[in-house]
Amino acid sequence: MAEKIDEYLKQGMYGQKQTKPDERRRFLGTLRERTVIALKQPQVRKPGIIAEVESALQDHSKARLYLNGHMSYQDLSKYIKVATSNHVDYTIVTNKDFNSELGLVLAYDYAIDHEEIYVTIEENNQTKPEAKSKTGLFTLIKKVLRRG
Image (cartoon, rainbow, N blue to C red; front, side, top):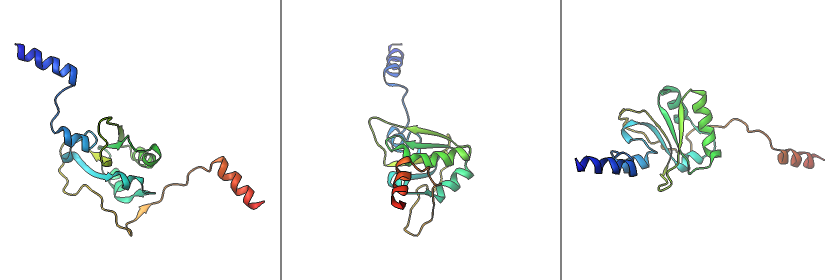
């Protein structure tokens, strides 16, 4: 009886026990066996959207997109837009104790065991350019001053 009370108190103080906590930290709250595709932080920061990720978002609309909250929103927003347009739910994950090397993970809530989840980018690999961003006031002023 005392053991059950101790377990109950520990759960209240520390939360429920999780399987593979290191793997969950690395994969932004999910597990490797559930992952469809993953990008490291420098890959997410590259300009444009990586074609493999866009294709995966289109093909796996029932999956969830996990984004690293330690990265700037500007880097994440292009993938949020693609996820939203493909009706994929997303979550921005910020672990105050650990910053994962991964910047983006597309995963299901059950095991799928994809062999190759990491995208390798070569210099000649295609990235889809981002949609043109809105022109800011200072950019317009600079253009006007250059002309006149």
